Length: 147
Image (cartoon, rainbow, N blue to C red; front, side):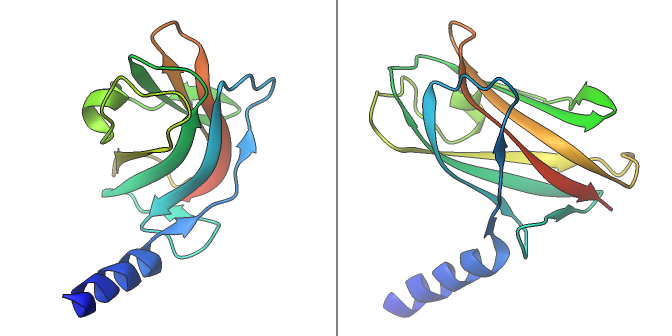
């Protein structure tokens, strides 16, 4: 059993990379951002392959209770353009059990299909989570490349 746990940990470590992010301009995030990782990703500069699926894993700690959390993803191509999400409800689709309690670390994991129809380009992705009152809980940006 210990061997299986070790092999799983090695597999996750090999396919998941903590990435460098920067806060959104004028950021007023109300939760503490602990880390952001992307699967599959081999380095801090992630390449997302068209026709595949990527997962983003966010470790965060809310500073207040949250009854609902919504995901918003945009790509900056001159201006910010929304990525269409089938279901932006993070409590239903990102492995969270709402309500979230203040001061408790939670792990958000969201799978994002990378359409084969997206153009090949480098862009900045803005990832935002907002609560039931439309307050920004987390907002950050990171560079990526679509291939």
